[in-house]
Image: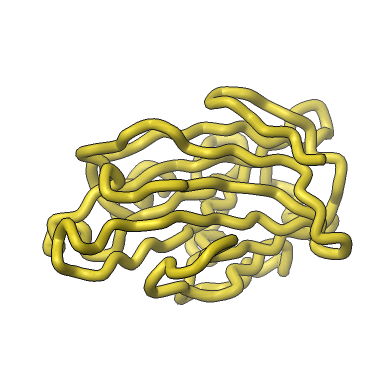
Length: 184
């Protein structure tokens, strides 16, 4: 049975290979435009900066150079139940300089479409074992991010040779470029 996390809670990940599933529902009738939420992953070192440009994994750079992180594809609508986007992670392959994997969701063209996370419901991040399809950890975002257009859902980080997950749930008013500026 999965451990349901609260914001700020940390839990050890006892599996070298797992999948990060991300899901959400949107209320597109409120803006007249369809929503396109995008998952992005920043693989960082001790200095909280991405190791190199190609360690920024998203729909246009689907696999990290070490092969440890793979984005499985962009979901343009978020329709349906379950995961809307997934990221496969194999910590046995991760670059030895990597100490943190940050998972961010942004709204594509949020400003032009006048959209924000206040119009997004049932958001979650879960970590599951792909072989058994068993949830290990799950964090449901319950805050109302009424002005934010980007949210750091969670981070996977290395501490004392152990990988852990932290339920972050921190919103940012701005887009993907703001995260790129922060982590570059």
